[in-house]
Image 1 (cartoon, rainbow, N blue to C red):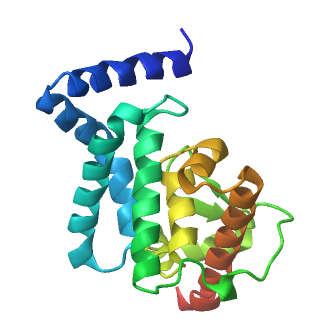
Image 2: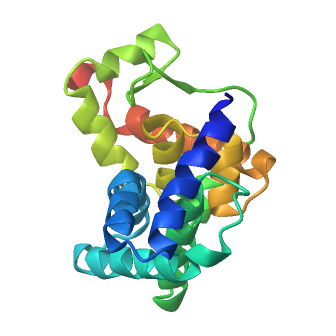
Length: 204
């Protein structure tokens, strides 16, 4: 059985139970997707006091829209799309920036960051530059990612932490795959430039 077919059958099981009146089944859907939803909300929404209300709004929308789910993607991807759109609406309402134009100054030519051992840690290819990551690597990366625009830090998190494909991220953000790749490259490049500027080898 293909992974996609297995996902559809699993998703349909929980959807049928919810639509059949089993409220505990929706609690299971929340449990299965809250990690991904939390990542999106936390990366897109800076105000901690607003995150809980937004998360509740996301699942309320998902519950109400569940009868219209058509398996065009995994259920988790569909709920992530609702999450992204809900956060986007919040940013627009608050007149907050989704993408900082100062981060949009480079064009893709190569990948400057990659995963290590399938984990969420990013490293630079250049060995000399790798020296800046030798102390408190995870904390440095975490703090610097948080300084990126909401869109850039969300893309980095979805691709590297959640290990979603370009196709899945494109569905969530409703951006073309090519645009996702371009933005992800720029997010990596901005992160790289910021790290090199702030954490010189002699300072570590």
